[in-house]
Image: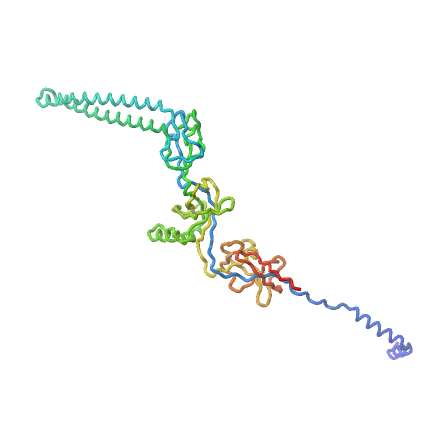
Length: 408
């Protein structure tokens, strides 16, 4: 069929067929799908980095000990005859604590004194013999050999007397060890041996007890090498006159002392100061050991407790801080999501420093004015566009909930 014939046929079909064609075309056009509008960028809470002079506080776990802890040893063997103290109570220096059966040692003293008396008698005889022989030797009435023999006997008798005197002194010393006295003022613990036990020789008790001086109380703790460098700069742990002067000056300041946090979370009422430290870092553990003394009125803290020691080791000028929750770690690498000026998100590598409450010091990677994503890190990707909502955080890094007044 030719095109002219087709047009002729449509003309003959009349206006009804033409109307149907127009309606069909309009209907198909109306039902065609259209592009949906783009969703708005997600609203993401962000915080602006904190810039401030930040004191770096170091907190270490340690163990309390007496500023002086002295073991009470049985220095001689024997049966324990008596205990003259109350366990767990205070004792005074030179107070009688234990008595070991003295009878064997008293007998040893008497025996030694007998040897001394015998040797003293022999000395007197040798001296008299020498006094008689010497004039005879001068007159050639006796031989030189007789004189030499008398001199030798006299000198040997002197040596015997000296040995006997030493033997008496040794016996008297061992007898004195049967009375064990308190070496210092302090608190004594529970005895390792009771009256009637044999002590002074393994496997029987040799260390009978401890006397601990708890005021001041001492805390021993360790820090790593990096912390030691900052700690030494703060407290001037230098083996020099200038360093010692600087150390005393730092400890005289209000912020120069250390705080002790007890196991129940309370802070000890008195501040402490470093009193002793190792000569070197332990190469096997990589730690450096220190000791600090804290005044302990009333002996509230005793030896053997766990405690935390906290002190300012440095003040970092214009430090950059962000909430710890904004930092991500993957295979030892740290990063944060930063919102750029065009509201796009970028993943920024950072080097974290010390933790301060819920905040973290950032050594490098961020600068003043940077905005970091506070929440919703898991659903973000680099390059995404967001609607940043700037929120407030307090000095510890916690979110400050903003409240609005009810209107009416």
